[in-house]
Amino acid sequence: MTYTITLEDCPYSITEQAKHNAETKFQRTLERNLGEPEDVLQVYRAWQNAMETDESELSTHEKTLAQKWVEALYKAQTAGLSELGECEAYFDLRVQR
Image (tube, rainbow, N blue to C red; front, side, top):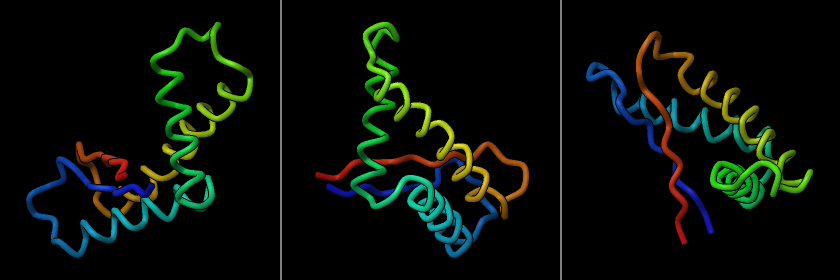
């Protein structure tokens, strides 16, 4: 499985090249912090599961992975949006089977 990253709600004035650069920077930062694409997906799924499960039902490992996602996501968003200035843009991660 793989995933794609798409910059959403970006300013209309942004060029396609700037959008692509932001998406690439976001993905590279995620992978630098989490590992290979398979590792990114494992941590992402752990975070999704944590969001849908009562905390008392999660193992320590699942909690650790979910927290790892939150931290990596913050770093990736900061890096990916760094060239865009103030905006409401965000990155969408889609899992492809």
